[in-house]
Amino acid sequence: MKFDRAARRKVFSHSMTVLSGLAIVVILVPLVSVVYEVVLLGGPAINVDFFTQPIPSACNPAGGLPCHGGGGVIVPIEGTLQLIGLSSLFSVPVGIGAAIFAVEYGGERRLARVIGMVADVLSGVPSIVAGVFTWAVFVLYFPTIAFSTLDAALALSVLMVPIVTRTCEEALRTVPNSVREAAMALGISKWKMSLRITFVAALPGVITGILLAIARSSGEAAPLLIAGGFGCLHPLSQGVENQTCALPLWIYFGANNPYPNWITLAWGCALLLLLVILGLSLLSRFTLERMSRRMRGG
Amino acid sequence: MALANETMKMEAQNLTAFYGESPAIKEINLQFPERKVTAIIGPSGCGKSTLIRCLNRLHETTPKARVEGSVFLDGQDLYRIDATAVRRRVGMVFQKPNPFATMSIYNNVSAPLRFNGRPTRAETDAAVLRALKQAALWDEVRDRVDAAATSLSGGQQQRLCIARALAGNPEVLLMDEPCSALDPIATSKIEELIAQLKQSYTVIIVTHNMQQAARVADYTAFLYLGKMIEFGPTEDLFERPKEHLTESYITGRFG
Image (tube, rainbow over all chains, first blue to last red; front, side):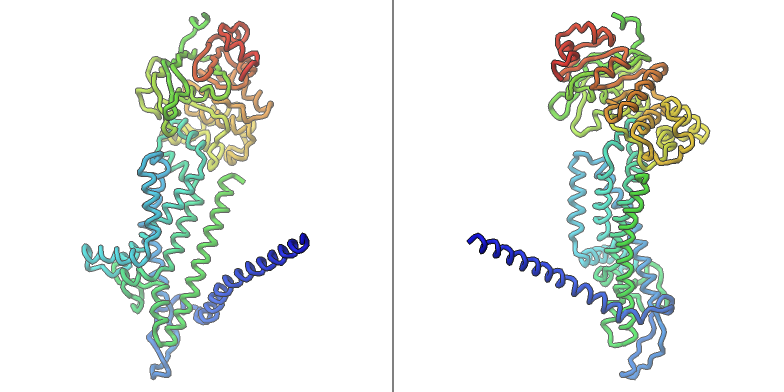
């Protein structure tokens, strides 16, 4: 009887191990196949023209549209860079300000908790809702630039603010209170302490948060479709008041067309976007480790 | 009483401090003589730290903390002026060394100058040199003032914190169990330093170590359960205590 129970336990244990192993395979298969597919189909699109030329005219040899070759995605690349720059410009100061207020000035006050709650709710807002919101605001108040890079960047910053606020808040909370007491005991005013001592000590975490927010927003297509218009076929990207283009937008548009050269460029964009986001994630991890080590004086 | 010959630098009057609703110290009346070392002793939880944290208005920075009564510095009520101005005149050293980890040794010491004004490089140089010498740290760090503050040993870090507190030129130096995180050698260095410092500063030190109080302090106050039990010249308090509670405590019957 006793032996039976032990044997049963052994069988159960082994089968659970096999099952959890299978679960890992199930997770890895889509991940590996997505990366494999994107590299396989996007890889051939990457060359010098890819980074320097605007979108070429559509071609379809089978349908009688001859291909002249060449062309690239400098327009979506520039658009993505403009969007990242502008949306960071809007969201980083707001996020950092809210976090500093919540941690350093909020104390036990209700407002500090409200900021955290607002950030949590905001981070649950679907990106398309953020897009339709800023688009509607622009239509009402600045109708001439309702489809623009500026509008789309504002939609993206709606998505970025809660990420920056939360990560910055967490980073500030990891700064030990003894640092604040040291500063206060020297008669250093609170705003100088907040900006020049505790914030500086939290900087590695803050930079990580900003990079993660950029990684999140640079992959968004939905808010751009609504608020950004479509400016991918311009010869070169325009000012921020014109219709926008970005890597995810071209993936959406290029892949939805029957023209092989546009489809190839869309795969190239997918690969580039994958690499950018992977790079940002790695960079954020690296800065966190590297900078916090240096700041601890190791 | 020997106190009659002293000039009083600081005075607590009817000082009561709360955490939430419960008072940690009650109706403390205490005078601190100028350029002398006054020790505050008592068992854990008796309110020693709370008391000195009221003297530079740090107590009120704790959430839900509150202070009643007054603290006078040269006759001026510290609770009627700006708290940051108070803290520039009353420096503090904490239990655990707390240098700014993101700054070099030099920048730590010059912090009170740089953050509280716009000093010239020559002014900070002079203040850093003076403070590091006063804190008996200069000889150990003269070749590496730009090294990270965290590269120093625990005892050195505590002397760095003393230097940082002194760089701002306070009149009073509060020390909250400054040696409790240090080994005996580092402790004796700090104790020697305290004896030096009282030539220029009024020093108030909290300690749970009675021998330390006996070694460094000119005057000693004994606190028990948030109340001031006895205050007097250190020798009198340890050798001829007036109160039964004081005697029980210094003879080790409780605490």
